[in-house]
Amino acid sequence: MSSPAGNPPRPGAAASRYGRIELRGVRAVGRHGVYPEERADGQEFVVDAVLELDLTPAVETDSVAATVNYADLADRIARRIEGEPVNLIETLADEIAVDCLADPRVRGVEVTVHKPHAPVPRTVSDVAVRVYRRRPIQVVVALGANLGDRPAALQRAVDALAAAHPVVAVSPVYETEPVGGPPQPPYLNAVALLEAAAGPYDILTLAQIIEAAAGRTREVRWGPRTLDIDVICYGDLVLDDPRLTLPHPRAAERAFVLAPWHAVDPAAVLPGHGRVADLLRRLDTSGIRRRDDLHLAVPAGTGAPVPGGTAAQAGGSSGHAAGHTAVAPGALP
Ligand SMILES: Nc1ncnc2c1ncn2[C@@H]1O[C@H](COP(=O)(O)OP(=O)(O)OP(=O)(O)O)[C@@H](O)[C@H]1O
Ligand SMILES: Nc1nc2c(c(=O)[nH]1)N=C(CO)CN2
Image 1 (cartoon, rainbow, N blue to C red):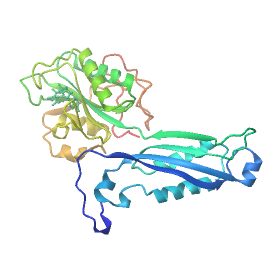
Image 2: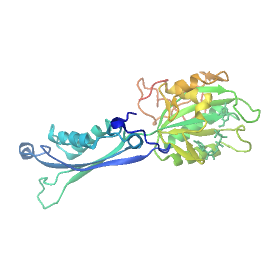
Image 3: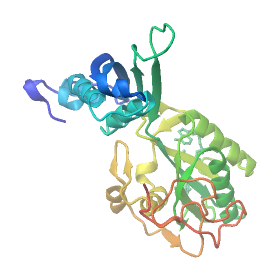
Image 4: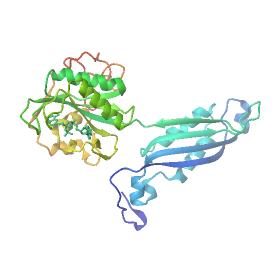
């Protein structure tokens, strides 16, 4: 990160500092409206924009280049007000929200468009529309099983996760030698990419409920299990909590996590560690083998549209992994 004006980097905690930039009362004259006189005469519009973003780079560098410059933002909003007229303030608010999200650092935005002099046949002090837009948060979960009907356990896990969160993609299945723990049978491992429909602790709780439903017991550390679901990351959230550590503290050294993740998303990055492809290259992968005879289905009605259309076609929920359509590697939005 650059550090103009000679400011040294400012040391900080490892955790992200999420925050908001609030810009209120951006005023300009526009010609938005349904009525011809609104188009002809124009009137004042007032916009408030609240941006959610990680302020860590700004705080660490004390550089305006590391954040959203609110002066530029005000200018963009005013130009949008003065620009091509639209009928509805809903449309104007949405256009401004889309503008705000064009900056990849912005996680979410709340835009309010006020039209205080709107033609209303009664006395009103203001008319306003507020829209919210949030970038979806990608969650990566790792699945493992080495007892019982392993493919069925993995498929049931995907189905149960998909009932609560859109599943964007599921990796190929890998047969892997156990890492750590007592002597035990080989694992099947896979990775699922979800769009978070809840907070990180809700996802952990759901994972533990699904594990319990699969008969998971915990007798020995790293012992054999009917099903294991680890939360590998929740966007780039960093959490240093023994109940939920994010990213998963051992993910970077586990080929049985990184190989399936890389297969389903070759551009993946493990927050704080770098590209999964690079991490994987440094690991011993001799104990893992892709099982192309097994496929985990993304249940119908979940997932994002995928170029080539394989994300949500297969039937799912059958409890059997073999024969279903896997999402093509690299087929992510
Ligand atoms: N990112 C995470 N994903 C899942 N569990 C986590 C995470 N961070 C902390 N935990 C906690 O770890 C505890 C042990 O989890 P679990 O029994 O699944 O471990 P394990 O799979 O045997 O080992 P490992 O954590 O090395 O994968 C859980 O009670 C859970 O609260
Ligand atoms: N091959 C393999 N080894 C493991 C696995 C796993 O899923 N696959 N999970 C562990 C604890 O989560 C410990 N060791």
